[in-house]
Length: 141
Image 1 (cartoon, helix red, strand yellow):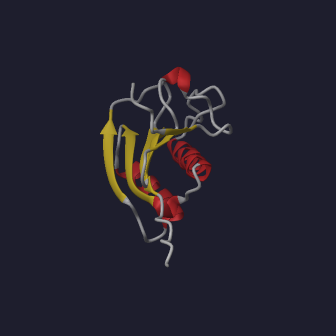
Image 2 (cartoon, helix red, strand yellow):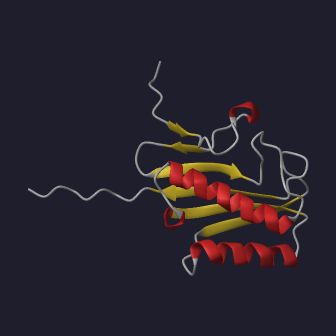
């Protein structure tokens, strides 16, 4: 049997994702870190609160927690996937403000998908990410 080369990261500050069938982050050999969809959740994984703007803020806070758990920050994110229930221009504006707050003018590549619903009742927004670990300086001889 092949050796599992993945490193699983599940911050203790977030809900346990195992009962839902996923891990918060998986690092592969090399530099890529894949972060599962983060959403506004309580300690049990239930979606909270009911306001879209608040859910966006909490989801990005959860994303930041996962990034910090693996020693990275928003500056390491190269791609986002965002999912909005009943997407419209007002929700796009809220998302845009949240992105600029966290990424400034250096925004990652992003795919936004408008969806009819997400995995759990009450979820209005979800964000997943791919981050890149910086290369370590090479030793000179």
